[in-house]
Length: 238
Image (tube, rainbow, N blue to C red; front, side, top):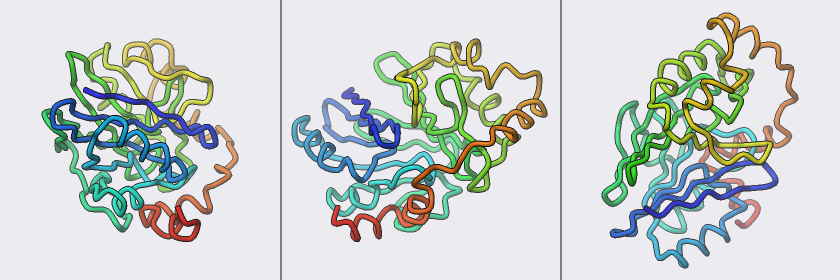
């Protein structure tokens, strides 16, 4: 399998390009619209055909490239089933698979950061990997104080869905702010400070008292992403 982890320095966002080596079918997870020139370059250099562009949730910190990738390359735009965004071709159900070549991405509903948050599980070359969006971060977890977030729901998503995966499953988050690129499920169980709580109530109290400022791009990103980024890309000629 072809795998590339890409990084947007302005928003600390990780984007993942995955492709089947034989069919050359590719998917991209959490693309950032300002990075379109890079994606276009990579598709050509790696000789891959983008079939699906996936967002783990409606983002508040960057504008998605889903709409632009759909228009430019004919890729199907994908969200989890709870999404209310327009311009989406496929709403993936919990437990449903998305195929590219011989590979399968399995959707896992992991609400809490937002009510539409999804994670995606992939097994390739003998290794399990999970793309967790903002639900489970490396040594952290996504805030739950806007976009219908709910700390108790997120606790359940993390503990009942993600932490039940095998301990050596590679964790690929949607962001990192300290330069870490990947982790493991077992590693997060042991070392993630957000997970060292006694119970759900303690987790809720912790998350409800973070007192973080809103993402600086939130007022632009959320409405744009509810339209798959179309209006923003058109306005700024991306």
